Length: 416
Image (cartoon, rainbow, N blue to C red):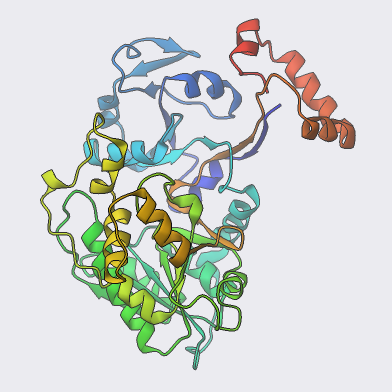
């Protein structure tokens, strides 16, 4: 049976000024995810929207399905679009590009990295952050320097406060854009040792050049301090796990893994050449500067694309990560022609840090976690869970008996 954790109040990490007493909930999606799981979450939508025309005008679970343009009639300040569809991050981007700056949040996740305990810790911190202060001098001779890069979101002060609380002896700086309101930038200043604001370059098809420019400035600033280790982070991502444990695993006493980067394998694409995540990195400062000295991408938008009917490895033409790491690999005299070259570079230059440290994107954090197993046949682990925790197993059994599942649900892998 599904074990549900979370709630609507999770959204306050992302939108701390949202009034939950006034908010209007509107769904996004009318497909299988919505049909299977909307009845199982404790939220009431006013209606749901779906871009598929065949679904528009129908009624599912008592809710009218409307076209996405229906959102344009809503009060954006007090509306929350809850996404019950696959690929929620892409949908959030499409809403922003096509409909405007609506408040959006994924409804749920079924698997890590969204660990409920990590989210609960950030929730607890977010509830007290406005009254919280940590006074400490700028670290002298810090061993670790963290630069956090990107636009300032409402959740960015929480991201930076979490860094300060967990790593008080690290030097921290924020690199962001000078066109943002002063009040927004000032909300972050108490939580870092230094704020750097720079002009944002024009966008091509994504913010790749903005990332390159700001990360280069951040890496150079951290390197100028003489730290032993540089860390790159993002303004919407909170660190989870232990950065100290990751550094020890990667470098030991500083003598191991010269020229290598610690990165997150779980955010990389296995079969796309040089698609290695850049959102979190650990390295020696000189290596960090070298990576982010990659020239800005001056190709036209028509050259940065990958059509659906093309060979899948053409994704590397469009993915920023591929552009970044392939250029860096060439500076080290690696071949970058295909997947075999990518594997060779990864084996010699990258180390996965996922078991020691990870990141949680507050911008994409779901309202609920579902711990669910819909398999038809049992497993030794399932049997051990029943035997070892019979009380919970009996509760699950009673819930399944009362749920009214059908034969089709059984063979459609919906029971659980």
